[in-house]
Image 1 (spheres, rainbow, N blue to C red):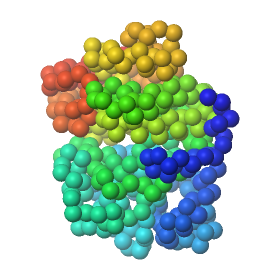
Image 2 (image 1 turned 90 degrees about the horizontal axis):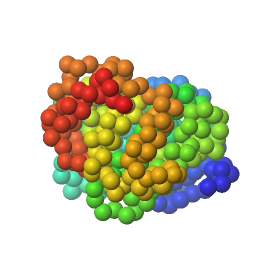
Image 3 (image 1 turned 30 degrees about the vertical axis):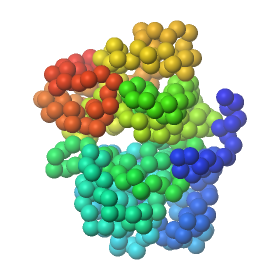
Length: 391
C-alpha cells in the first residue's frame, strides 16, 4: 500500500462512521454539533489528560460554541467504582453525550459510563455473559464518540468495554448491541507523541487481536478477511513506529490496523486475552504488555489447532514460508524488537496467584473461543511456565 494513502483524510461508514486522517481532531466541534451534542463529557485516563491535544480538543469544542466537562479519574484498568464516579460527574454537569478519549482505559471507561446514564440498571446488568436487557431501546443510551489515542485496543467501533469488578476481582466485558458510537475519529497525529514503550505495548495488543481473532474456530469470512488485513498492516508498521515515532504514515497504518483488529475480534478472541484479563485484574498490569508476554506460549499451546490458519497469516505477513516454526519465530522477533519481557515475573506477577488467575481465566468469554479446548490443569500449567519463561 502506498504510504501516502495514510496521509490523506477519508471517511468510511463501516461498521460505524470512521473519520480518518492526520489533523482531523480539529473537526470534533463540528462532528459533535452535527449530532446535537451541545455539552459533551470528555472521559479519559489520568495520563492522557495531561497531554497537549486534550487542551486542543477543548479549544475546538469551545470554538464551536459547545460546553464541555472532563472526567479523568480513570486507572489503567478501569473499575466499576470509577464508572459510577463518572456517571455522577456526567449528571452533575448536565452533560448530554460522551467523548471517550484515549487508549483502552479511557475508551473503556467512557463506553461503560455511557451504558448506565439513562437507566437505573447496574453496570453488571450489561455483562457480556448475561442475557441482554431486552426492554431497552437506542434512546436509553447517550450519544458516544470514540477517539483513540493509541494504536492498540481497536475499541472505537463498538460499545464493548473491559471493566474490573472490584468485588469479584475479575475483568468483565460490558456492552449492549444498541449502544454503538455514532462515530470514531482516527487522527494518527494523536499517537505521535506516545512513548516508545507504550507504542510497542499497544501495538502488540493490536497484533494479538488480529492473530487471535483469525484463529477463532468459527465460520466468519468477513472478520477473517479483516483480521488478515490488520495483521499484514500491523506486522509491517509496528517496527517502523517503534524505531521512527514521528513517521505519521506508519502511525496511520498502525491506527487503521488496530481499528481493523477491533472489528475482527467481534468473532472472538482466545487464551491470551482470557489469561491477560485476569492478570490485569489481579496485578493492574498494562494490558497490551501482558498480552505480548503471553502470546508465544499460547501460540505453542494452540499450534495443533491452528495449522490451517498459519499459512494465510504467514502470507499476510509477507513471510517466505508458511510453516508454524517460521511464523512463531517471526512473531518472537517482533516481540524482541519491541523489547517485550520474556516472563510474567518481569511485569510483577507472582506465583502465589497462579491458581486464582487460572480459575478466573477459565470463566472469561475469550476462553470459550480459543481454538484448542481448555482444561483448568492445562491453563494452570501454562501460567506457571509463563511466570518464569514465556518465550
